[in-house]
Length: 415
Image (cartoon, rainbow, N blue to C red):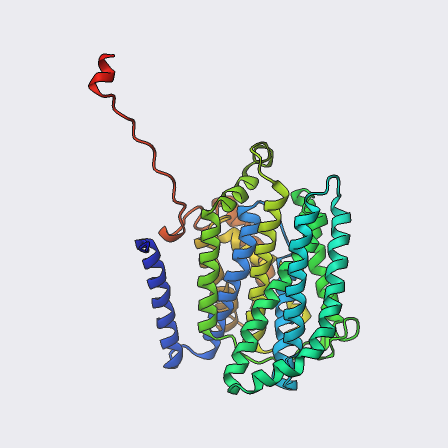
């Protein structure tokens, strides 16, 4: 059995200590509900920004679509828990689980088969994938309606608090899977675009998602989302504990990915696509891996966010707000996970906390002036960000030790 390294023990111990201190302050009332909310929002920003840092800072794809996947995760998870808490029905959860599971199986199966087809263009592949997922989603609705009474009765048999937590956790996780699957489908035709064009395409995706949410009650048929009026009645289930658990999980997954051969291949694509391709690396495949995993993190963060304030509005996910995680990773340092965590909490505590609480009313609207000024200052004085390439020991890359020169034996020296 391998022993944990000192850096791992320090990371886990330090994370636990931070959580215990914060939870103690909240429990004793020394940290009021306002600052408790701000800290949880900072934690959510950590997760969505790490996802974008993986896509842009580590893989080199300039993406403005992170906020769109964040919105998908938020509304999908909120719809599931709303249906359970208000209607006492697990229909939303059952359909979401079936649709994402069947679509994931279909995507993996089609990927294995279509990768062997020579000359298949991305648009044709996209059509095949999309047709399969739409048909399976429609099938999931039919099967889900039949299974809903059984699942509902099983959950109802449990204590109400436990059943609610199970529905919440499954909703958050499967809404993240939904965001990842949509990112895979969306990425098929556009990942071949250059960095600037890819950024424009992803920005367009965020705008499309926002428009669909504005009309979610009439166009998509989700009456409970109430379209442009905003969705209310969402249970407030995202506690400090769950935010802490998911941050640690996301950091560990990202760290392990970057230390693997997949992570080194993803990083090589950012450094030089031509050189990476010459070394036999499948550029398209590793772009997809980074994009899908980053979108999964965005959907996960969205599911957590939806259950903090218990209210969602499409304006929260407009294209202006989509620049928030981009600003965070630029401040913290592109490619730096430590910098992203630091900048995310600084963003929440300063811009969402101090500006709203201690400065005159209305001053927070100046953020759209403050953002570009801070970006200009950072880009001029410290282009690598506040922490640059710095990582805590747990997150640093482990480089292979150089080989020691073998000393010649006396017999070899005399030969």
